[in-house]
Image: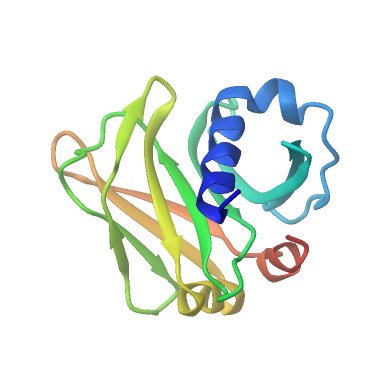
Length: 163
């Protein structure tokens, strides 16, 4: 099975069956890191991803989620970013790691839980994430106002190595 097929199977399993499938999975990264590594067996292979979920403190409602899969032989990783509903999908989303050059991407589609984009993170971006302190993701809201979502990179390197 190709890497791309494994990736899409993993994403499907993650976003459709995540509650049931990962409820019994072993969490490899414990707080204080905001990143969790979760693994599941798919077609006889152990597939892992690291995930950071940003939620509203009072309600626990998800605002955003960033998941990154195992790197390929060239150091490239597939990732999925889920952002809240109500963003302008025709506008590019900007991801900035500390003071590094911003990376832009488009939203692919929206579902009732949020709007998703599939990304390929090159080794240089992964290296910036490993060295960084925070990621700032900026989308545009329906009134064209910026919606900024900040994610911590604390524990990123340790958890990425465990993939």
